[in-house]
Each structure stands twice: as C-alpha cells, then as structure tokens.
Length: 405
Image (cartoon, rainbow, N blue to C red; front, side, top):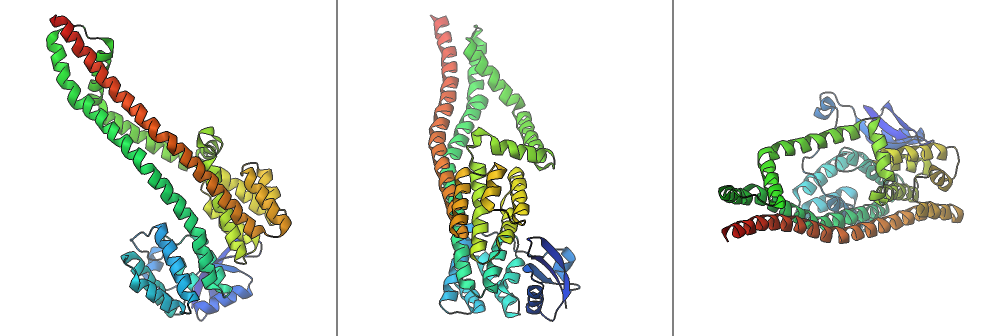
C-alpha cells in the first residue's frame, strides 16, 4: 500500500512525500527510521471519496473548544484508569449527549480498531483538531505516554477556551445595549419624527435650527438608509479584501500590532499562543526548533508571523530563543525575560508556559478594564443621542406653543 506523509525533520523543516508500507503502523515505523516526526500519514486509496475530493470527509457538526477540552480530559482520565484507547473512545461516545461528539468518537474508534494510530485518526478531522493538537497527541503516543500527553493537551487548550468564553460573555451586554439603542434611534427617526414633521408643516412657522437638523436627518435615514447600509457593507468587503491582499495585508497587520488603541492585546494574545504551543511541545519531548515550527501555525498576524519565522530560522542555527525574541523587537518584553530565565535555569519548557500564562493574565486584565469603561460609555453616548433627538422635537413643539400665544 502507498501512504502519503507530511513530517518534520531534525532541522524543523516540513517534508512531504510517499512511501510503500504494509500498514499505517509500518509507515510510521519507516518515518521513525528516517528520523522524521510525522504530522500526517494517509493511505492513498483509488476510488475513495476522500481521495477524489482531495481532502478527508469531515463532520458538518462543529464542536466548540469547550467540547474539545472535555473530550481530551475525559479520554485522558479513562486511559489513566486503565482502559485501552478504543474502549475509552467507545465509552466517551456512548455517554455524550452531543451528537457531534458521538459521531466523532465512533469514527476515531473505528479507525483505531482498524490499525490506525490515534494521531493519524485525529489528522483526518483537521477542521476539528488543529495542527498543534494532532502533533502534541502524536508526540505523546510515540513516547508511550498518551494519557499524560492528553492531560497536558487539555490543560493547554482550556485556558484559551476560558479566555474566549469570558470575552464573549463580557461583550454580550454592550453589544445588545448598542443594538437596542441603535434600533431606538432608527425608529424615532423613521416613524416618530414624520408625525411631528406634518404638524410643523401645517403651522408654517420657522423652526429652530436643532429641530430642522433632526427632521433633515430623519429624511436622510428614510430616503437613503438602505443605500447607506449597502455602502457600509461595500466598505467592509473592501477592507476585508485589502486585509487578505499579500502586500497590503501585512502592512495593515503591522499597523494593528503597533497601534496604541489595541493596547498591545494582539501581541500579547498571539505571543501567548506561540509560546504556550512551543513550551507544551517541548515538555512532551519535541525538540525546540520543531516545536517552534508547529507553533508558527498559532500566529495569524502576518507581521508577528514574519518575525516568528525569522526567530525559528535563526534558532535552527543554534542561537538562544530569548536573544532572538528580544532582537525582533516586537514580542512583549516581560515574556522575553521569562524565556531568558528559563534558558539560564534549564527549565525552558516550563518558563515558556509560564510566560504564556502571564501574557494571558495581562490580556484578560486589559480586556476587563476596557469593557468596564465601554459599557457606561455606550450607555452615556447613546442616551445623549436619544436625549438630543427628543430635545430637538420638544424645542419645535415649544415654538408652536409660543405661536399660539
């Protein structure tokens, strides 16, 4: 049988190719003899749907990060309790109340029982399990400590899930508040104001400037609101396409990274992901150059990614990680200092994770402070707008009363 593979060599370079083997386990053994760390090993099957489509069949039911954390920690607990892998997957699938998890566990169980490694089974669900997850699980499997590896992996994924959930929960109220106030403004401008406009027109008086301005704004929203909304949508599309442009996009990413209004959140969050992934992989026995190669996939900001790639390339030449991060001038200084301490004390994997924890705490603190200011600011601003509209109409009504007397 012919297998295609993607693997990382000793220098941290990604290699790909094909080889002949009697089974997937034999293919993995051949890669080990070639001193390659496998990332994915897939059987080339003629006439198979996944081969025709060019990618493995994936589940349509998306699983949340919290589901992945529960699945990972649950599987680690069952393995530590003495269950074999396929039995543990069966227990997890049969006891879950989520249809997506049941189907996922059933598919993983089927693949493991047919002779596939756990890492290779995970790799067939790349939309669910990211690259770093598969690599870390595979490292634990190869090292004979899958339960401990999954336990560390769950501890790795859980902080990111907690931060994301806290941010979403914190944004629900200000978003709902802003939407309700915006809806109120639109209703006042398009439904309430026209009734007063006819009243003012019958009086044939010269209205105060605030009233005339509000009535004109109402006419503008009623007559051109759809055009304005369409224009805003076009602007969003243009900005999104510019961000994906290979030349313009990296420049915009650099501006975002350096902008004061971002309060350093982009650099903190993405550096945390990079360091946590590299540290966790190193703790699982993956050499640092290979660990940083995988960790590059955690960075989405292209300016930061370019700097991290340069760090990775120079790291393969034997340079110190802390010196390279400091020389880049784009990574948070406090994290760089912790990395330097880890190199000096021989506890680099632990200090990489500690640096990531520190960055996550700083980012969460910044987000909490921003949200504590954002909610009252939105309330005051929108309340002032509504009050200004009402006051403008009342001024016009008082003008009518003055005319009557």
